Figure 1 (tube, rainbow, N blue to C red):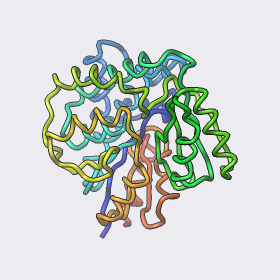
Figure 2 (figure 1 turned 90 degrees about the vertical axis):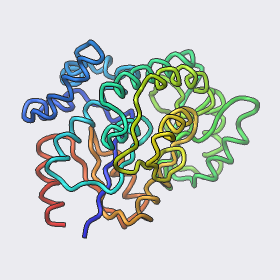
Figure 3 (figure 1 turned 90 degrees about the horizontal axis):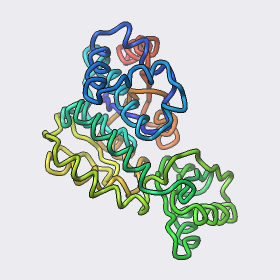
Figure 4 (figure 1 turned 45 degrees about the vertical axis):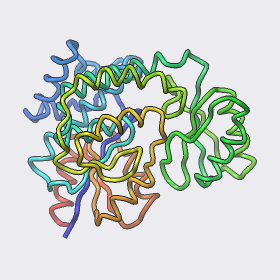
Length: 312
């Protein structure tokens, strides 16, 4: 018997046109886009469907846009596909997971991630911070390289994405030094990432008190489906833990490898990525061979995944 988890993508999965065919074909998806447009008092749906790409890439727009598309895909999928035993999301995707689990209201979540994206973009001046993906080096070796390269500045692992891919973040010069040390230690590639801020490191600490004020005004219910958090990589069903975990997540690394291992340990056999792209499915394949992953982002992938899961 298949045991299913839903996972939700983070920043970087956005693409102009995302969600458009679902909006046109499914009233549930349309209701999600309309609710967020109303909550933010702007036509975010138009930016998702038509761009321009530069506007969609701005963190303060990207975050609510991906959340909205993910929530729209979930709204369509949940009435047609199997119910999940767990949900999880990568960084921003944790908010989508909490919406799917009934813990956060969609409108509240959209306003919160709009604020989160704005605060993150404002936290570090342009050209002060950086992020880079380290490929082909074990996570603990990447951490050691960061520790050795810091020299009084900040640089640390930001995303433990897969055994072969760790993203680092911090001060620009420190990230460059750490990249060189990773190369010396045997990394295959060091790829600077085109991001507007150094996410999930101590440079994001100023975001927390501001985000805390926003989240203090949000009603949080106990998740109806356990949410595997980025910070602890364990399932949470306690309403009182939701906000502290979201605040800690701002400057803590995303422990995605452990999140996937937790799903596997709890007997999950199939993961469905709901939202734009299939980044998480690719990472899951590199983390474990015991979980089959699918992605749903439009009408075509919806039909395909429903057929595959029906057979499973």
